[in-house]
View 1 (cartoon, rainbow, N blue to C red):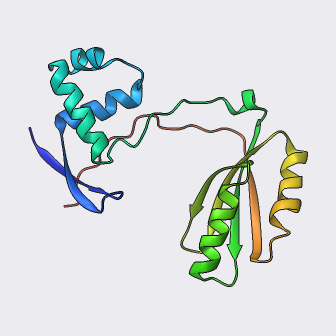
View 2: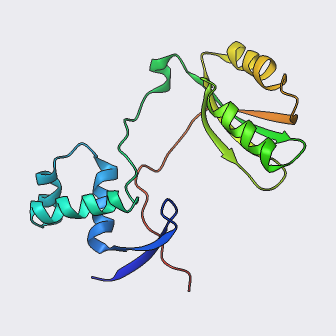
Length: 170
């Protein structure tokens, strides 16, 4: 099997992911609830081999967890938006403080730290447009470090549920 290299950001080291590992990752992304026996059968390997490979991928931080896909509307979060935020002064302390603070807000699903015109991108989910407006006015506009923000309401989201390894640069 060909060995390809990936950078494990959690450990800060290069770790090999071969074709069998890549197929394990693909199958687990498709259905993380399948048993080790089912996974081994699909791969055509012994269950012990499969289990050791999954454990090794987990130890190396390639597999970082297993998650349930949740319908946001079922949790009374039917309106989602992306909020681009600029903070000032632009310093490590301000960036870390803002990131830590907004990541704890119940409306915020994800926080992205950016380079470019915007410093942050917040993915938020709330009950309705009135609650989005309230979040923007009561939570964001009150913060002294925010120099400005723009909001884009999300109408639809399509997500690639299976992420495969890209080839190494030539």
